[in-house]
Length: 256
Figure 1 (tube, rainbow, N blue to C red):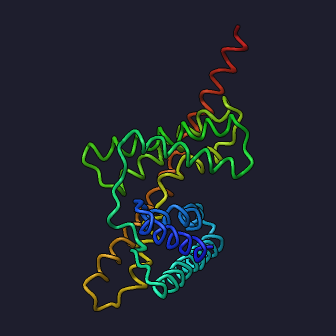
Figure 2 (figure 1 turned 30 degrees about the vertical axis):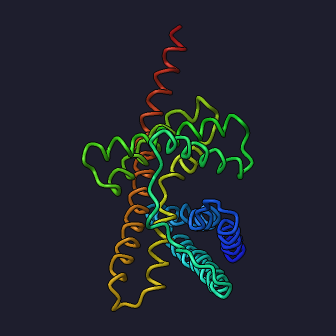
Figure 3 (figure 1 turned 45 degrees about the vertical axis):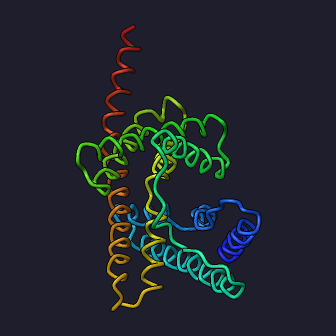
């Protein structure tokens, strides 16, 4: 699949040169493979490790490495074929910048809604997941505005998502774990994981670009750990609070 996406992007770049259009082939590649990178599974592996499911965590980490390695191999083969036809473009989005804030929120909501739609959710589940994802993305941006780095901000946002999901799951009659999984999708470091592994594969250890690529990979791992810890922490803290709310509601119902 990654080979096909890369070749389509190369064909679009070739057509744009002849038709005078402005097509960002790198953006086409990234948008096509971002769902193939096992970012959510990467976070899930750390969550399993936190919950002491070590065998499952190791299996998921191995699957992440194999899946992401396959994507990288596919992109590299596609780039090799494209260069044979004289078409070259960077395969990593290092030069790309995020869109404006409103577009980021819209993108976060669409990503979460598409994720639950892929898992056969109903329309209400799509709306709830999109709103939770937008709220979580806003929390992460808010935390960064207070001086927190992206790793800490992602963990804080995941914790808030976990807390809100547990407290509101009964109200919406929607599983809390499903809300958490959809809400943290915009926070998972799938693209950073891809960039880091791609850099480690492309550049030799003595290259000047190897250490920056290794730093990107390390940051992706830290973000994944932070999101996993935050989501688990919010889930753990929210359960007794929800239980207290339920007990209070039952007592008030019995009294009335």
